[in-house]
Image (cartoon, rainbow, N blue to C red):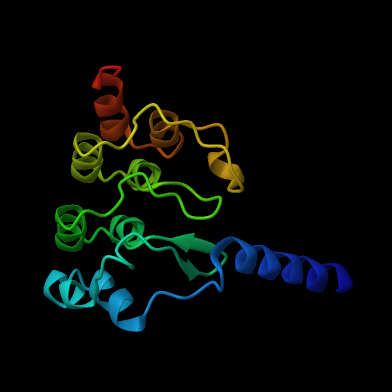
Length: 157
């Protein structure tokens, strides 16, 4: 029990040190993304928060990564159009392209690559299931054959 408390405190201090004070995504933003309500999301986005990292559970996510996770294509397109950082990895977690590869979001993968996401990126961080993975190997690991096939076809830059 003491070890669990100690680990929780270490995690909390780590999050505070990395991100100031770790903040949860505002409820309205979360609801808009989950409902794929791009009109509502547009009213909540600013230059300061479009690529910010927000705490959910034990991990930090950008609004773009959350749109990918929730398969919210209208919100995803809005975030891309407004200039969200396609390579933003939050505090030891995976960037948007890795989320899209994991969840089999082929159209999102194609857009991310076209907007500059690195298909040859190799993850090294705190999320053990993705450690050492590229978007291609992560897609394969998660049985996302269409995404894997597309990523194999992307030429080296």
